[in-house]
Length: 135
Image (cartoon, rainbow, N blue to C red):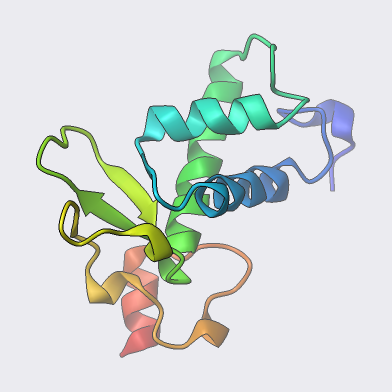
């Protein structure tokens, strides 16, 4: 493992911390839906080593990639779903426990959620790998 000074964010284990923060955002407010921008802003506010700092282009790219990985992981674990409302323009996600099916329609396919939780490791799989495991 690289020393923290050589990493994109100078914090050891930043990927795990960002993924945990992604899950925490949904767990703390399951009744809300989040767009990518709202989720990113909330995560930045919640992590002291990101809050108030001007991110470089490289850091922004890495942050967006890690958040995408966190979203895929949470979908595969069945914790969140991609939803669509009557006025939805951008993709939105919501905690499974907070989905009101009268307002939001679940558009997450069954093949996106792992059928066996033991098959989903610490990192999110891409959709092709997940389908291969589920078959």
